[in-house]
Image (cartoon, rainbow, N blue to C red):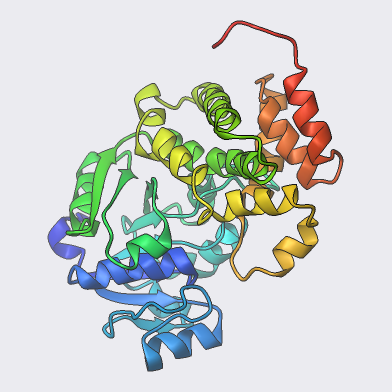
Length: 336
């Protein structure tokens, strides 16, 4: 199957959460025929009847041309599939539509995380479940609330097939959202996954009132951990310094709009993880990615003290105060 930008006229967005809805809005406003697949009946009714998504993006009017459905078979028929299901559910959702996808159909992974059970990146999971498709990864600094309102954003579209990757970047770009093609699928994925774990730590620093200096140190040393981890898996340095690496890290660690950073702040305020997650509709990916990152890092002897601390806090094995004390008392070393 030969794919070109001219044939990327219909787009299915798999996942009716905030990010899926924002991507559906952008694609529709750029002239694509958009189908938004969601599990939640109230989301489907809201999108089709009221042109809003009150559950995940309240107060934002949506393009009336967006149509929502619960029919995964219908969603699989579009020219391009944007997979925006939460990372820990990507396997199940992609398996459900696998038999209805076509050879060479672009399958763009917009989920940021690492599968906890297997330790696999999302493209590796897709390689097992929807192998007949052409996989790409969309990642970079972007809040759904900004994108859905048409505020400017720039992201990375990573695909090993340069022809399809460039065609996807052209087809999915809009006046408000600029996509840069890259062939580094691994780097784009790891940047988007690990930054969520580090954002929890940034939220803890902010919530404890440790100051701007501590926040800058945390983000900088966190980036060193991300870089060590990603390069061990074959990511390219320029990818990590780009939108899907450093760019996404700066955004996610610097704004309370970030679900991961706001979770860290809530933990620092003394709320339990169960309380925080129980009060949210949306998934906070860093909670689940932390365990996978730490396990993989230990297997490959990669030093990641900040990620270790976040994982221990999330698991209830370490208090916030003890984690801060432990990081500050680590042996002095040369900067890397």
